[in-house]
Length: 534
Image (cartoon, rainbow, N blue to C red; front, side, top):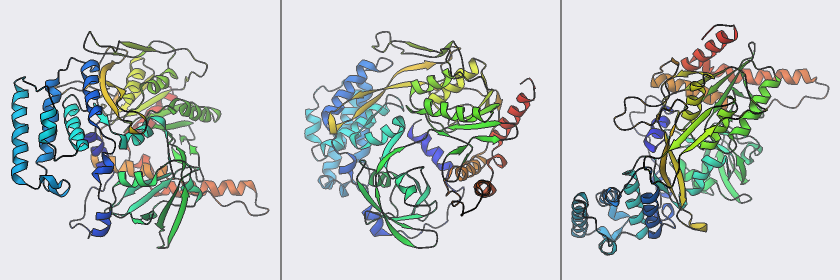
């Protein structure tokens, strides 16, 4: 899923109405947290761009010449030079005449490139653009060049490499808290993560992080906050936090390796672990896959085993808002539910591509899952989510409920562009994938058909989606367990306290009361278990 689509998803998490007047901004805090381009573009060099352009020419899924990337790159530079107040960051461009000269030069090159007359020596570009640092020139040209190919091809620069790895490895090094910013610019704790330094230190949901290492955290961007709080395992970081009663305290924490669960259940049990049963009476389980990482398949097996030991008769598999992830993780998930046949195939458009067609097939496994399944999808289910839902639909293994999926059927490969600490990677579209029935679900600019169509379509308005996501977030929050039983207190009494804590969470707002798609899926599963033909 590209950046624009992610922004649309994030917008759903914000209140439907915004204040009519913006709260007063702490200028000192805002200035302290202003993004420094030196840090954002550290270790960016011209050879990275040259290697990336070479790899694109050789490995892109269709023939591409340098004209298209050149036009995109020059367009990216033009945007930089026409950005208001640019001279504040780059003093060499304060001279209006000099800036106009640069724009005239770029416009001339764009005109030549449009005619196919692409210059071969970039030396004259470097000389004329000497008032832009090399890393700025390279990054802006590269962003424009690869955006001209497709929305999913881009360079992951060294400063973003670690963040990118989190989405595929399923782990990172930090203190283990989910955070968000509110309308007043506060950095707010959504929930600590299980067994993390933050959870062990007693940090609670809704507390406010006022400072990070002594620096104000108000009006900090989430990306900046993540970069400052995360770091190598074993290293210290100090967070100053204000609790819901207004008490302020310093929390010296030691960073650790945090495993990010891509599998979530129906409700977080106080103290840790998931209750997977959305309908305990009918033994219907609920599993939500947030993305596909290298640990997803194993995590899913453990969740299913947990439910099976408790007699699960049906499973709701929620892939809504799942942007995708690793292709082999998606095929492993499908392989758990079907015994044979094609899962997905890939192929490029160009016959001379070094990336040959591939076919992934299912195998009969000992851990095959025969439990009835209903899969939930929506317009934000993309890529690997579409492989899973599409394959299970084509094999008639699951009923699909919700709305048509995103339509991201392109495959990206990673090409290293640097060494060691200067690691940069080109993420390049090299082929498209095809469902078992032969359909390519990728959405092109003028596509009329794309994605995976649900068997049962249930539409939800943006307001309904916001309400459902808010209720879902409440169930995801990790809260404290009931206190240890007093001397002489029966274990049964402690169990009742745990159930009482769960009940308090449920009382806030049950997702089933506001989520029409989930409610419909649960009803359909109940009917299927009762013997109805769906």
